[in-house]
Image (cartoon, rainbow, N blue to C red; front, top):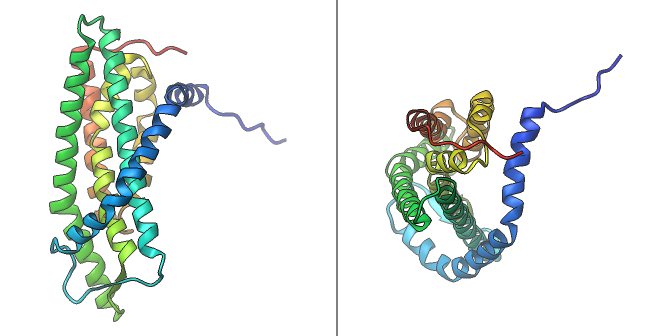
Length: 250
């Protein structure tokens, strides 16, 4: 006798809380995403030129273009990445404003300013981590691995630029984990008990997303995912110390 498949009510409640908040800001997210594409496409040419001249290309590696539309599609991808970054920033600002209201702060604008400054600092740390550690190490790993197998080290322009930007963007967004976690708890978007109950699910999702932006070896996967998990755990510890949380609305 087969049992009917059912989703854990706590997981359903968690996804409901998150999805309802995102749906309530969907128009703003879409608008910022479109603005990001409109700004990113004209800027992509300069971004590509700068990345190619930044000394990140390993020795004995050639960057090639295989199709006439490859650079056009790369421009669209750069715009989409910028739009995604603007959308995340908007959600952080919105969460900071709600956090100020939830704490009954006389000046909720101050919460927004603090959140923007914190988000900027975390983004800069993420870029530094990606640019000076992850990107050179992973590019060298990919080139060395291909050369040791006797393969030609010719990389497509879209793959090379896309790898660098997506890795930087993943670190920029991933390093916002403590801020997003703190704001979510303060505004009641999600409650602490739910995060604690499903922290392993969050770890697993983080590793899955990390695998999408890194080569398939354990070291690279841990270097991408582990800092994000540690920042998430640090936010939970900080919330426990300060006790600044609000019961999530169901």
